[in-house]
Amino acid sequence: MFNKNKSIYIISSIALCLIMLASIQWGAISITNIQMAAAVKHFFQGKTPSSIYEGVFLQIRLPRVFLCLFSGAILSVSGVFMQGLFRNPLVEPGIIGTSAGAAFGASIVFVLAVYLPMDWKALVGPLLVPLFAFLGATLATYLVYMISKNHQKTSILSILLVGLAINAMGLSGMGFMTYIARDPQARSINFWNLGTFSGANWQQVLIVLALLIVVIFSIFKFIKPLNALLLGEEEALYLGVNIKKFRRKILILNTLMVAIITSFVGVIGFVGLIVPHIVRQLVGSDHKKLLPMSMLVGASVLLLADLAARLLLAPSEIPIGIITSLVGAPLFIFLLKKSIFIKSDA
Amino acid sequence: MLKLQDINYTIGAKQILSGIQINFEPGKLHMILGPNGSGKTSLLKIASGQIQNYNGSVFYDNHLISQIPTATLATYRSYLSQQNNIPFPLTVAQLIQMGRYPHYSYEPTKNDFKVINEVVNKLEISHLLNRDFNTLSGGEQQRVQFARVLAQVWEKGTNNNRYLFLDEPLNNLDIQYQKYLLQTIREFIKEDLVVIMIVHDINWALAYADKVYFLNKGTLVAQGNPTEIINEKLIMEVFNITSKIISVPGQNYPLVCF
Image (cartoon, rainbow over all chains, first blue to last red; front, side, top):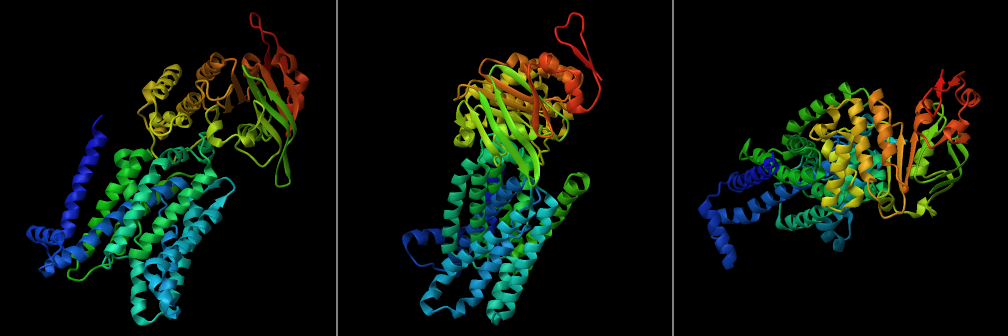
């Protein structure tokens, strides 16, 4: 018993390393260990890559793998945050409309950017898209939280239904932007809809890494309040949690997380549902173990999904959102059945 | 000392509590009685800091409750709610440990574990520690939650006095554990502890309470020493039933028959 958690950590870490290695090497172009070593050597010697393989490794494969890894960790933590806040294992950013809101916000800037003055356009990619994604995600989260909250209890059925509506609004908003967009743009908006890591670059990796560091430091302060919330909002207050303040903090961070990831790689649904569910089976609901473990497992799961997205129909790619939804939706139905149809008080 | 001054509370147009004036003294077991919907739980939630949109003032040792930070109050005030469903798997040990949350920042200290140990032994629930809370019976859940709130105020905190609120703690308990819980509370009471609980059974109030408070339609109709104020007329007035109060040989408090 005393080593159970430790061994779970070790096994997950080893699995993550192996999956990372596979993700780097496998793809439309395979990269061997020797080529990897050469690329690293040349990079540190300051030389330009000597072969196409080295270029693919440094400029395409590596940023993709790191972006995917960090995104998996962040999306999984987001799922844990939301489930803790709403006190239900069924919510995650894709289901209750946060991601759709972010994607809608991002698509607005993306389509309307052509009308911006020249000197503003440079801001679009790195700044305006994430900012509008954040605004869209904030609006979506706020609406779901306020509408589904009646008096003291927040019932899961109302969260899911309001989430459904918000999701539909986000998607139709995106549909409208696609309609008025010019053709190459329309294709790109479609990518936000389904999610992909094919456009990963080092700038995105660095921004997401910074975000991940913020998340890791915040987690330490969130463990006790999230655990206390398992007992209910009233109980959490009696245990010394300033609920209003805490809710605001965690919602802002969570929205920021979802917005940044979504603006870079699009909507990747169900990761925040699948990963915490698996991890709860392994280590239980204590957030002290649940949060770090979800990051570890989340990174592996999303890397695997990305690998599948690249390899299943190689050399062409399937959007990763399709893969995660294919796996996640049945699990969602299973959890829904468990929580709504069995418990009458849902 | 916990002082409620001129508490008025309405939800919408409905008056829940009106003109409540109570001083809860430390070292005593206070019991609140009254029919369903008479405002007992609202009163408890106002006094404990859960409900904040009332009129009037609540003082903890002469500090206005709204001036005390949530985290500080939690070191010397705990509250047992009526019922609680937990939508995630959680072990009993983890749940009881939460009672110490207000006292440590990241890792529980040796002292926290010592307190948890003492509470668990006191309530004889050590065999439940590794169980999932959701698989316990209603009575076992009640005892585990009681252990958690007891652990929270087990020791003297940053404040002079400690406050323990119990909303119908006897629910789901069989008669043996009802008596056991009441006796545990009696033994636990020290000169710095205020215990305020809601009960339904007038006979338990006669046997264990130091002071009783009868609520009816949101007003306090009687308060005082149970053997002095409980009589057939009061029971008729509050609960609208006839009763008979008889003395029991060898027992220093009477029995109410309905």
